[in-house]
Amino acid sequence: MRYAPLLLVALAWEAAPRLGLVRPDTLPPLSAVAQAWVKLLLSGDLARQGLASLEDLVAGLGIAIVVGIALGILMAWYRPVEILVNPLVRALYPLPRSALIPVMILWLGLGAASKIASVFLGCLLPVVLSAYNGARGVDHVLVWSALAAGASRRRVLWEVVLPAAMPEILAGVRNALALSFILLVAAEFLIGQRGLGYLISFLGEGGVYDAMFAGVVTVSAVGFFADRLYLMLMGWMLRWRE
Amino acid sequence: MSALLRGLARWASLLSLFVGWEILARAHVFSDFLLPSFSAVVARLATDVASGDLVLAVGLTLYRALAGFALAALAGVAIGILIARLPLARWFFDPLVSIGLPMPKIAFLPIFILWFGVFDSSKILMAAFSAVFPVIVASWAAAEGVERAMLWSALSLGAGRRQLLWEIALPASLPQIFTGLQVALPISLIVEIVSEMAMGGEGIGGTIITEMRFADSPGVFSGIIAIAIVGSILVKAMELIRRWLLVWHAEAQPV
Image 1 (cartoon, rainbow over the protein chains, first blue to last red):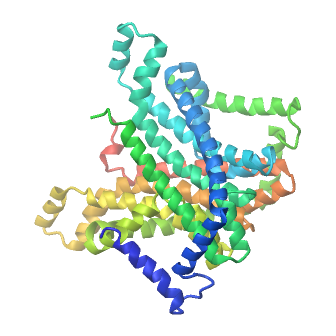
Image 2 (image 1 turned 180 degrees about the vertical axis):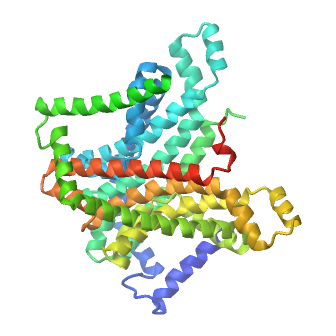
Image 3 (image 1 turned 90 degrees about the horizontal axis):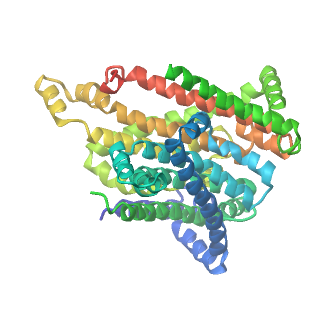
């Protein structure tokens, strides 16, 4: 019942081109898009390009998460790192991250490396800032009592600061996840070669619009379910909290 | 004193970034093509600003991004408040928004090209479409969170429905709505630049891509610096507007 409006939208999508309200070549009916999707699936294109996208996304986002958390916590934990890095982070934060894609192409060429680097650079700062804010917000009493109880600084970092900063870090990573999709698809539009973004723009330029719509629906669905899955993971990782 | 130190550290670290860049480039660790020297990039920036090309390109991008943002702000606030107040609107929009918010809207770019072409309207609508969802969600939550007691006391003092909306509900939800707008503005700029890169034509995104194709790396770097400056100014401006609009609010009071 909750998703009934979606059914309405789907019906309108099917009916509008069939009734001649819009031209079928600008909006192919939903049934044609579904057929095109099945054809893409059976030909293996969808799986091949999807896997290629997934590879680049996971690599870029994964490196951004690891480096970002490390850098953010170091910033909160060691004064010199903070003094050195924090102003840079703040100065670079407002830069519209998509502007870096051409530089990555200049540096790394038209290939997977540029896509991975674009995703990495785009996602790094949100993770750094969330880890920094999370680690800075850790209750000092927790840190002092762990130190007083004889824990080494390294252990305090791993067993007190990191878990306490986790809620904020996970929220930052969720932002980074959304950004990573934007950057990857944008990079695939511009670089081509492989990936779902490339598939969509390739089909669009070839005028195969029913398949192009199928590709757009696929990317949207993947983005949506990735976010839902991540929310579940987040709930599971924070299950120890009240 | 510590504020002064922080200010110094801020400039020192930016300065050392630029100096490091210059030294790295001058030492020819990388070729001039990969890393033009900072001074060459600044010189290029100055020439392009003086010739008016850069001002025109950045201005066009800014106009499109802000137009898209304005559309997203108007539609987003209206839809958000409708959802909070009309059960029918909530029934219809709730599933659409819950799917639309996390969806990578950038994938719709080829559809926007198909529907609206590769010129202004297409680029503006693309930015608006990408930025509208955070505004809807923020306004919805804000309108829902307005304290009942405040509405009741206004009603009992004789306020009409229209006054209730304009003088109580909207100002009370303004801080949260504004937070949504502060999320939406950078998104519209990011998406605007991608659209320009993909569709080509005038505007800083298209300019940078053309320069990249001609292997004109000082041009690419100066374009990025220009857009970085614009991005910082926009973010700062939003903060200032927020402070100015919410002077009356508790968040503006000194702690």
